[in-house]
Length: 245
Image (cartoon, rainbow, N blue to C red; front, side, top):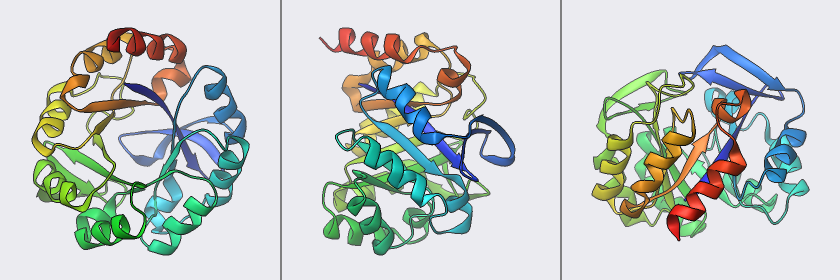
């Protein structure tokens, strides 16, 4: 299981939000490329980037920073989400050296777009499902739909997505622990690799996720915990490696 640092981009800076609220953000760095270097030096094997402005604008806003990080670390797998609503945007990111495009809001509103993207860019599409009480949220978490996350995930298995990033938005940025059961249930139900997101607080959360990694959980995204120091990235990845041996 991979421990994946999150670099959330807002107005050109590296920030963390609480429960997706743009007006409740903490700035951790004004140099996202340097922040990427910090996590790479601590052993990150993949980076999770989010264009927060893009998620609300519906198109890339911090794209140049994403490209700069990809250029700085050409061999490091990078996944990017936020404002990806067209095949042109996906192509631009992949051409810039990004490995995976995460389709979120558009996946809920236009599921056919995911099928189209998977046909056009096989092996490079991840779906981001953000849920509250099992129901999918969209538009930067501003809207909660009546769509069940598990039902939607099953559709996307047929499309051929590489993975699903599953975020329990009631826990994201709140340092309250991961919703292990909901994440595990999704992975077992849909048969797609799931990357857990939202609520990772400390090494015990990583240990708990790694214990059920065999059910289809291939990674855990962490943000506030590694920025504020309650989780050591190197130690967390080492633990996952030891538990998988």
